[in-house]
Image: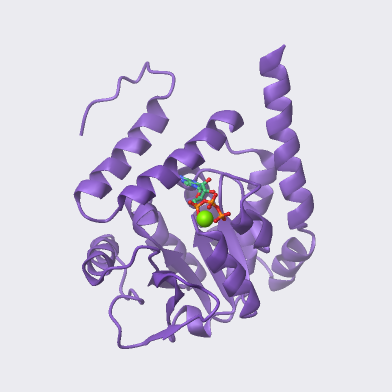
Length: 252
Ligand code: ATP
Ligand code: MG
């Protein structure tokens, strides 16, 4: 990995970018994944590469929703595994969730590489690799229509970090509750999800693990309160206001 000077103003962002490049070289990430990350980076630049209090609130609601679910599933793709493999495994453990590989640009080899990477980080079971248990979502017209019957097929709550809008909308049509992590509050995914965490996945995932652990020790009524008090539309509006405020300050 090229060394990024710690004095560089975007050091953290560049290190994250390097992780994606490494993931690309390892066969986990596809070229389109690199481009999708760039779209995210642009929004993170506007945010000032920080987790806002609104995002914190969404993280807490997401953790509570995962803990309340009967069959929570975390959907992962190449970018997710290149950036936060250990945190995905930790979150799955903390929320008792299944992990399923779901690729926009699907290939058996890449599915296997992603599953292997997750197992290396301690995952006991990774669904979605191979065809044996796969079924299709007819609303989605890409390889991503494939889902695992034991995973997303049976899920009531699905966490989709870095997901495409077609698929998020299809999951909603199937009656799932969807949690998204997406730096763009205007994307179809961000708009369609029940809880949208507008933050970089590299910052949001460790916070989710922390909240899932903290909330799992408290009473269940507290989880219901957190979910009930969360309004995704209002939260997305607050995130846009925050971005607008940042741009206004910068323009002075
Ligand atoms: P949609 O399909 O939901 O309308 P889109 O077509 O604009 O969105 P996609 O390429 O389908 O975008 O999905 C990539 C999304 O992931 C983008 O919205 C981007 O902001 C977001 N993203 C990329 N990298 C990260 C990251 N590290 N953390 C959080 N979000 C990210
Ligand atoms: Mg898209």
